[in-house]
Image (cartoon, rainbow, N blue to C red):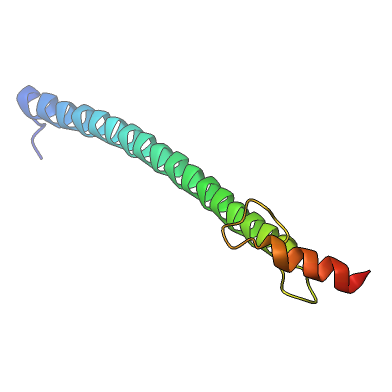
Length: 94
């Protein structure tokens, strides 16, 4: 076989270097975008946990404002608070 011409060899090595450079840059961009997506997912997970904790706290707070045996709301800041019912409940217990 005849040896390859210098132009063919230069073209081969140029294509090899170009392919390696493209692969390096492309991988770096993919890793960067994946890292950003990971940060967004972690932030969203934390927001979901906070919302879940707020809902649990609100549920607990509502349960605390209602007397367990009578259903009377004892929290004066609750919109359904009725002072007369609280006084009646207090008199009933004492």
